[in-house]
Image (cartoon, rainbow, N blue to C red; front, side, top):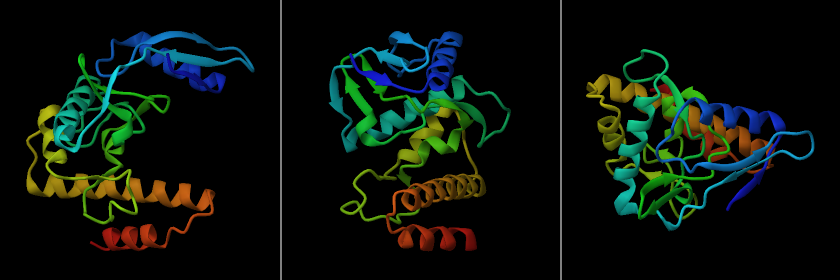
Length: 195
C-alpha cells in the first residue's frame, strides 16, 4: 500500500475531495492521519503496468470523462474541475480493473487543461531529452471525446495554447527553482505567446 507523508493541509484537502465524490480512475484512500508532524495518506495498491503508448488515447478519453463528470464551471472547452495534477506516463496504470491515475497527491480543483501539461501539443520536445513528455498522437482528440466536447478549429487552437503556456511556465518555474537550464522552455514559451 503506497503511503505518502504529506503536509496536514494537503491531507485534509485530498480527503475532503474524496469525501464529496466517488472518483473513478483514482485509487481509493485506505487510511489517513491529519495531525501535526504525523500526516499521511495511504492509497490502495493498483496492480498493473505503466500505460503503454498504444493505450494513451484510452487513458486521456477516461481523463476527459472524469473532468466532464466533475465539471464545476460552465465553460465549453476550458472549465474548472477535479484535476489529478500530475498526469504523466508513470502515473497512469493499466490494470485488470481498468486505467488508473495514481500518485494523486497533487489533486485539486483547477482548470481542465492543466492536466494536459505533460502532453506536447506543439511538438516542441525531443523525447530522448524529455522522457516524461507525452507526444500528442491523437491524445487531445481522445480527451475531447471523453469530455463530450466537439470543438471547432479555433477552440482547439485556444485550448492547445492555454495548455502549453501553463505547462511551459510550470517547467520554467520548476527548472529555475532547481537551478536547471530553462533556455529551451523559455524560447518555446516566447514562440507560442507570439502566435
